[in-house]
Image (cartoon, rainbow, N blue to C red; front, side, top):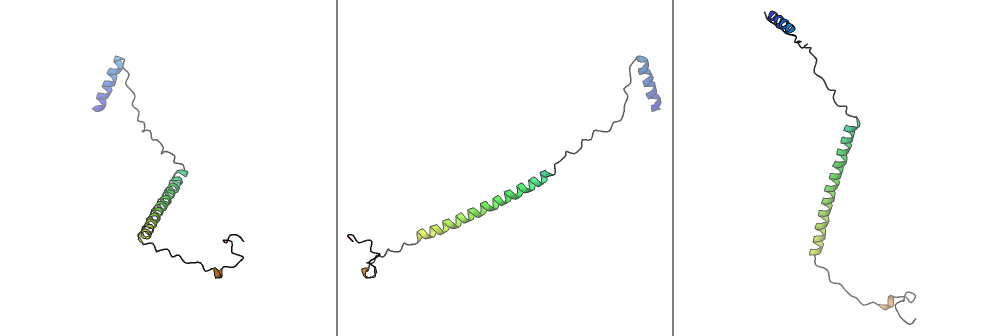
Length: 104
């Protein structure tokens, strides 16, 4: 019954001078996946490794800075020993090495 209705509709359109659009089934356009150059994943891997090494280096430097600050603060807190002055015994000074005496 549907076919008869469709044919009658097509005949009426034809007699009225109206063209019936032709329906064709076309498959949807499939876009190919974007071509990824093989260097791109390698570049990301190298970049990640370099950033990781930079992070490790930064952590090590901060740790060393912290240790050095701790050592310096401990040194400052220690009391300085008193300087000891002694007299120079001139008997042990040789004459050839006596450049401090004037007039010779």
